[in-house]
Length: 553
Image (cartoon, helix red, strand yellow):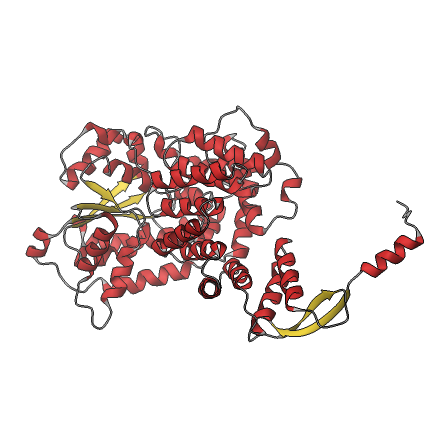
């Protein structure tokens, strides 16, 4: 196309082109110096406001690396502006530097305690650090400073959900939507809460609304793809498979899009195409978060040595509360089991709590006078109040199985297992939000699976009476027999409600929240056969063992 501008217009345009000045600035600290390019309409050194505004502009455009250089330059010059420390904290969070991010946000609040956005950002970082109670306080402070801060209400809803306060979370998110009906993130978060509560129809509506407001909302597409969605409005599916949806996307967003496509194609029984997108998603995920199965395997070995300490006295056994630990691999039927057990109204579920590991580490302190068991019950009571029977579904507690059996009175372990190929396929398809990095490698999935199985076999040989084997395939094929056997082993009185765990009203926070809301069925058995070619790397590892030599026969 020809440029029809006049000579005068061209001259005017030249005048508007900013001069470029460069200044050496160390970023990040301790690394090689880079040149900081600062755009200004004058030849003089840029002012403080020009540097800040340039940083804000870069950040709004998504040019995070350049924005970070400017913020670091600003901080190195000892300028003090609460907005800079708040925004820089957000960037540090995105870089995974959570402790540094927290420091930056606390500095922003120190400079301006009434800056609601800093309290919001700090709450988000505290949530990432697992400091949920502190995160709740920060979000409530942001709302106190700005009662109509829709994003703060939305993020508070997420934290309340993490704390197991689903009803409060729903209220908070509905408030966010009421204040700002066009806030896509609030509709997305509300959809997640409603899904956890089993309200799938409304969850679908909320997620579709999020996509309507933000047609490239990758996480909303993924969440919607996990539901048993209706066919009322499937325009979103066309958008999901469009070429334009991947334009200018972050790697994380690409991963969500690929997994969403794989889920849709799986539901449509187009397994070959689903396989393609699954591989793309997990390959990219491994690039961002490399698999490190050795960490899990080495930790298992170290804890095996610790399991030989102490013995439980009969007095401790009689006076202690009852602790049930559900262990095994992810996607092995543990959420279904937890729903069955919590049909007993005397049982309180602790979810996927890491308080056992916390107790183990604290007990090793020099001046610690409490036992692991006492520390564990103290933490359990702080979560749920005075309770007599608890379930803990932190699956990696299988690494602590020997310590549980040898040092926690009145503890029982239920080990969940299933066909390893179905298990590995389900893990590979799961798209876990955090942790479980090995899940993106079929080889490492097989290695971790075999490691936990070998470890549990050894513990069962030592503590057979305290460990129950629950085979998911048998459970869903013969629920009447298997559930009665389990309840008898626990020493509980039988109730027919154990056979209808899909009616359990509790919130479910795992990837299995949709499946568990349906009556027990065996639809997922032998699903691995649809992905047999894809699973070859895992099959090769498994068939090297005697137990699984003929697994594909």
